[in-house]
Length: 105
Image 1 (cartoon, rainbow, N blue to C red):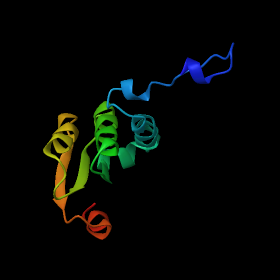
Image 2 (image 1 turned 90 degrees about the horizontal axis):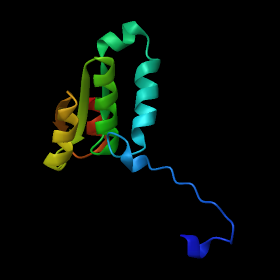
Image 3 (image 1 turned 30 degrees about the horizontal axis):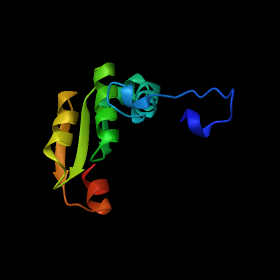
């Protein structure tokens, strides 16, 4: 990186990949989950995702000790499903279409 910067330029990196879930998605999920009223939080949260958002929502729900359901399309790698489950989420499979994800969630 230094070879491409003008002399004397300082570069700062935001190492989002070092967050607990491995991506920047955690910030938004924590913000959304903790912004819920206590009444809404008691009902839990649901999301449809087959990757980083799934893990982030599950992690945020676990941090608030509320139920979490993650809807993933059939064919989602087992490792991604297991990652959401590791945070306590219930993982529900659906057909691999946006419509199926919305209707299942």
